[in-house]
Every structure is written in structure tokens, then in C-alpha cells.
Amino acid sequence: MINLNARPSFRAHHDGGETMSKATTETEASGRRHGGKYIYEELRKQILTLQLKPGAPLDEVSLAEQFGLSRSPVRDALARLTSEGLVTILPNRTTLVTPFEIEEFPKYVSALDLIQRAVTRLAALHRTEADLKRIQKADDVYMEAVDSGDFNAMSETNKALHMTIAQAANNPYFVGYYERLLGEGQRLLHLHFDFTTTSPTATRLGRDHAEIINAIARKDADAAERLAHEHTMLFQKRFLDYMRQNMTETMALL
Image (cartoon, rainbow, N blue to C red; front, side, top):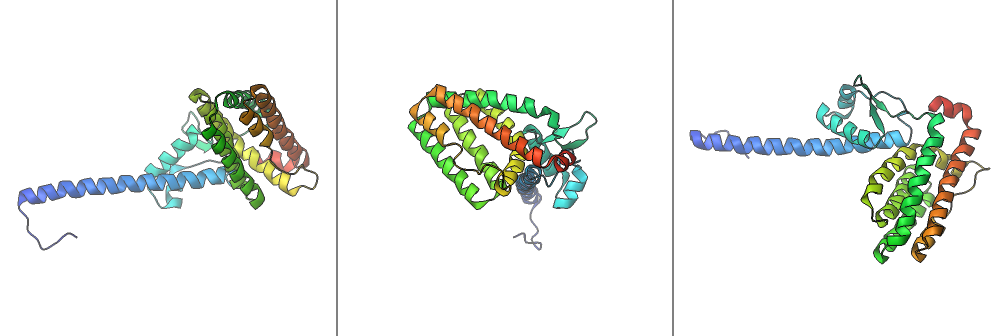
């Protein structure tokens, strides 16, 4: 506690000022990091669950007022979301939730299929016993989310499982690109999870990853790659089924 009645010497006052300044700076920096993390997590959740729709504008000043923080942590959060492909900054500096043109869906699936086959094949070739345990645990966590019916948890744990497989591939060059693709696809995944768990005509979710994990466990690279491709095609089918059932609403959304 600062004693306001004390009359320190100039030197003592000067040193105390430096200490206070440093402490204040560190506190403010810590607050910005904490605030930026909170804003990042909240905006990310709203984007992935489509509360913030593709193409929605994101204004730093408005967001700072909304969260009761300065523009600095807002800017940090938006920069992180931009690096994940969820937010786009236009040449005129306008910031918005990254649009998703439905016409681009085949290109997205093509890129996802290629990288998913590669990392799954490499995981089968290079995985360790520790990797396998982490993969199996990640699948159990995903299934807990499926049982809970929490779409946001389902998309997050599905991504975590695939990233655990990617890390077992032991090639960091693939990991970053794959994570970005999975992140961009989470909005679509949220839509098809909603459809799959509520539509009477949709195929129910189950242990969709079990055969892939078994192939990785057997170190059967050919089977792992083939099953990864089939997994991508299943995602495509479910999303297109959703589109056929909800075309008008979805086109307005995207």
C-alpha cells in the first residue's frame, strides 16, 4: 500500500516511480493479454456457431465498447482470428467475418481431402505408442461431446482429434495448413452436426473415426489414407444433404 503521508527523498521517489510505472505497465499488459484472449474466444465461438454470420462487419471501436476494453486487445483478438482464416481484412482495412461462397465448397473439400489423406497416412507410418494413446483419448472426448449433443463441443473435439492425428504424422509443415483448413470448416461442421443430430433422414453420428484409428494402430498406411478419403467424402455428403434440406435458409446465411 502506498503511504500518501510519506515524504521520501527525490531519489526514493524517483525509484518508486520507476517501480510503479513498471508494475502498472506489466499489469496493463497482463490485462490486455487476458482481455484479448477472452475477446478471441468469444468472437471465435460466435463465428463458429454462426451467431456472427459470414460477411458480418467487425468494428474495433464497437467491439471495444461491447467488451468494455481498449482497442488494443480487440486488435490482438482480430489478428489471431485472421491468422486462423475466420476473419478477413480487406484492402480498404474493413474487417469482417470471412465470407464462405458456397461455390467454393468443392475446392475446399478438394484441399481438405488432399491434406487429410497425407497426414493420416503419415500418422500410420510414424505414430508412436504415446501418439496412439493420445489419438484414442481424443476420440473418446469427441464421443462424449457427441453424446452431450453440444454442437460447439463436437466441432472443437473433432478438430482436436484430427490435429492429434496430424501431430502423430511428425511433419510440422502439414500441421499449420491442416489446422487452418479444419478451422475454416468448423462453421460448415456446425451446420451439418445440427442437421445430422436433428434430421430424421440423416445418418446418425457414431464412432466415425474408429476405422481410421484402427488403421493407424496397425500402421497400415494405405488403409489409413483410403479411410481418411472416405471420411472427407462422408463430411461432404452430410453437408450436401444439409444443403438439399435447407437450401433457401442456407443460401441466405452464406
